[in-house]
Amino acid sequence: MQTEETLKRFDYTKQSFTYRSIASYTWDDDNTGSIIFDSVTPMDVARQMLSRLDDSQLLRYFSIAVSYRVETHIFAIYDILLGREELPIEDIRHCIDSYPSLVYCILKKYIPEGPAELPENIASCSPSIIRNILRSANEMGIAALAALERLAPAILALDLATYLDLLWSAALCIRSSKLVQEILLVLHEARSSSRKSSRALEFTHKHALAVVFDRVEEAADTCPCDDYGKPRKQSTRPARAKLVLPQPTPEEVEGAAVINDDGLQGVGIAVVAHTRVDLPTPIRIHTHVRMQVASIAPNSTLPRPIVDATVTRAARGELHLDVKQPLPPEWQEVDWNIFDAGGIATSAAMLAAVQRFGLQGYECCRLYDIIVGLDPATDASSDASEGGSASSDRSTATDEDTIDASLNASQRQAVQTAIHSSMCLIWGPPGKYVGLTMLLAC
Image (tube, rainbow, N blue to C red; front, side):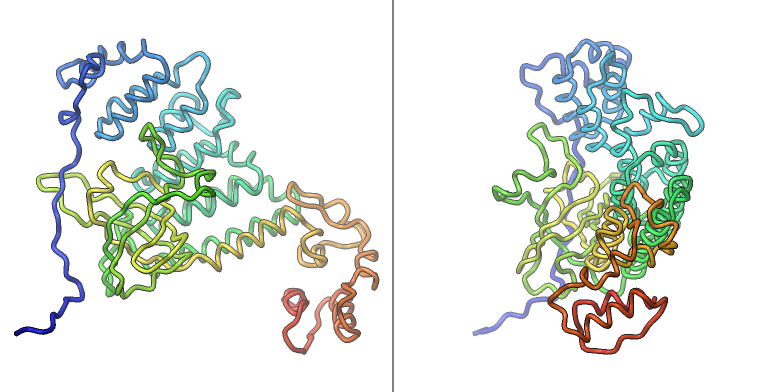
């Protein structure tokens, strides 16, 4: 009698699935929808019928079009929303979050050629527009670069925190090494006049770009992709999992990201990947992953969908993921390959430190003027930036009374030496001010 069973390390049989088709949708008593989406209905007739509907009905049909891949109707409905006398801003923003390629409809309507500012009635959507250009860059390629160049005035007008968040989004969303480098440089150049107005802003932009480039290079080394954003074959076999919706906690219900009741997906989609308990993978919390559909769709020419995500929580047999691009309509029916693209904890902490330095200025760091390279006698009071300001009287900051009273005499002397010297070496055990003095030496 057999008393033991050996399990294969990678025991998996590829499953098949079928892409959704509008022909399989049941309309019940909705005669209007059945006519609009009927393949024999001319598109101009469908547009006329759609134009007579209110916004809530349009959003319902938009959700159906996205769920069943009716691309012609997706763009037709969005053009109608953009043509309203009073723009439904929230609906417009929600639609581009659900289907990022729609941002090009906005550019076609408001910025047909050359860099220009967005009209006042839609300028509030500029962060969402730029973010969704980045989210669609893998599919649109060089068109994303042209779109960002047209939006240079909008990028320049962004506050520092929003700009750094968009830089980080580019690093997490764009998989082609060449494309992401070009996009990061376009974003950086669009801010040239802003950062030249202040040495503090110049410092912040320079180091933020360096941090993001490091994250991009690490992702390219850990999970290399081709020019189309498709992960290359790797020596380490990717994890394989099913995706399901998480059971939200009361705290998570208040968060911004999930799939809404109407089926439209917002930015930051929370899902759970169920993996094998004995999964031999380095994927942990704060890991950047790239997920590709592993199942096969017979007789289909559509490429296998790929999305990026970050791991927000890791437990035995499951990974909680924050997905950066919209998932395909069939995402719960298919198996996914999960590729490790490296950890983001260090890079995220470094970028957060740079942002805090740029926003809070001298309040964040007592050596603010020295790090930035300001002359404390002349420039410290005048170099106020959008994110922070320097001290007007450095002598006050270096006064012995401002040093933490909990420090002993030796530590107080070390801090005084660091502040008054352009470069110094402080030797001693790890302590509260070791990192500060090392930063000064750099």
